[in-house]
Image 1 (cartoon, rainbow, N blue to C red):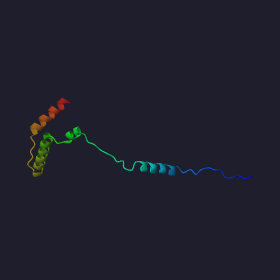
Image 2: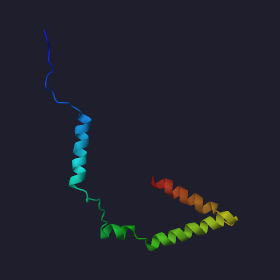
Image 3: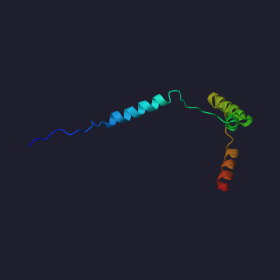
Length: 88
């Protein structure tokens, strides 16, 4: 008995997928991503006077700590801690 070759097409899924990717690239060659920031988001990202004052205060405290001039008022610290924990 003689078995002859069947006429089956060559199957290569990788090649088929690559051809689809190549076709997609050719159909949209000039498409790019785009980002737009709303005016509300721009307002929210702008610095406020409170933030600038806070940054100045932090810099002042850093310089005091580094120079050794920073002093902690123990009574004020204790009263603030008590009031904080009493709120919880």
